[in-house]
Amino acid sequence: MNAIKVWIEEAVEELLKRNPDKIVINSGKSISGRIHIGIFRELFICDSLRRILEKKGCDVEFYFLLDDYDPAKRFPSYIPADYNKYIGVPFSDIPSPFSEGESYAEFFANELISTFPSFGLNPKILWTSKLYNTVEMKNIIRTVIERVDEIRNILITYVGGTLNEEDAEEYRRELAERYPINVVCQKCGKMQVIDKGKIIPNRVLNYIKETDEVVYYCHSCLEEFKEKVDDARLKLTWRVDWPAKWFLLKVTCEPAGKDHTVKGGAYDTGLRICRDVFGYEGPVKIGYEWLRYGDVDMKTHKGIVFTPREYLEIGQPEVLRYLIIRTPPLKHISFRPEFLPQYIDEYERVERVFFNYQPDANNEEKYEANILYPLTLVDTNIKNIKPRLPFRFAVIFSQLKDIMNQQTIMIKAQDVIKKIYKIPVVTEAELKEIEETIIKAGNWVLKYAPENYKINISSKIDEDIKENLTEAQKTVIKKIIELLSEGDFTEEELQNKIFTIIKNVGGLNVKKGFESIYMVILGKKYGPRLGSFLLSLDRDWLIERLNSALK
Image (cartoon, rainbow, N blue to C red; front, side):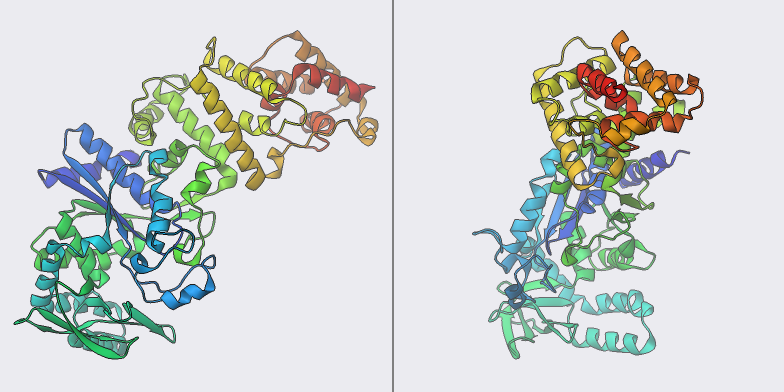
């Protein structure tokens, strides 16, 4: 059975087995700095499930929970050094270093959330700091206090079993002495301190039932405090916090990274607490591998990031959705910006298959396209294939400003689209998209393009290049001039005809033939795919350039 069908449809079937009146899909992220595109693996899985379930007539809620109540452990290198004074303070309480009136968490969360419409995402946004102020969450904390012994036993079973004997003994002792509840100190505003690399949290030490008060010790102030549960700023430790949120929101499904979803890991711990303590079955577990940046694991708190905004500067959001959704969750993805043209070509083929514009598509491709393509769309109302400028052409056009004016470039770009899609005119909306695609391509060339995509056309051909052309190469150039004078060709037609010309010229291999054309135009032996490259150039300019090589 096809892997794509398995991972999406099996998850959907599992959710439907719950037979709930409402399906709640949840995702979350801690806000320790700029958030990288890795979060989209989780978000796109959630959104794809939502789309399929809603199509089946289900009532679905999709939450994105921002964990702004987490305390700062460290700051990325782009944060001012004096921010170290906020270590131990919840991100919701730290001022933004870059904008007034926002917290640290709000600034970086909004940086991410502002890109959601561009990627076709519209989850309901929840903030952990606000959630913990609700009556419902306060009551959940009271449940944790009342049933703390059960929770301790579960944590010892799942966590203690992964530790060596000495560490396990220390873990059991810490659990026995403290409740799994952190506290923001009413005096200094810190939830924890870090001493010699070790995190020391402010934990609830005792609960006074008669007055509904918690007693805790602040390791920053070095004082003991007592507060009512309703007034205290409490946060459950994360292995208890996670199932508490599942119970509170009645989560039916939450994907999570491989580190949490291993057998006996944090997810399984949460499910056990959810069932045994809160009496709720808990969500369907979907584990996923990381989305890596090339060969590097992205880490928000260390500043190793490639952000959604950076992606939108170079690529279509649908392509990133496709790259993630096409890949089964337990298979890792390495996003490499330098491979963007290949990603786009693959996506546009799927698009053509979906709309029956790809005659050579086999049944498996059609099956996959019918499942995948609708899940990639930002505008879900699209009913027909959208004429778009191929990225390989946009890459070339973005670099031709020294030899062609903007008007000529746009005319050439329209000609490309008319030929590909066999349409008489290009609409205003399509013209706007052409301009945007060329801008994105220009950004990509500037930052990520391999050398063979880069174009730098000098005003005239170097004399050494002319002198080193062989008679066979000159013959090829003459025949290409004749070919260009004959009429219009598609990209494939021109590519194939040039290949045939070179092949039929004696004493010249194909590689040397192609090199001669690149040398005359670019001054180097390689460049973009020749058919699309030559079609992107002004024909009169190109013929004159080739002629000048023969003089």
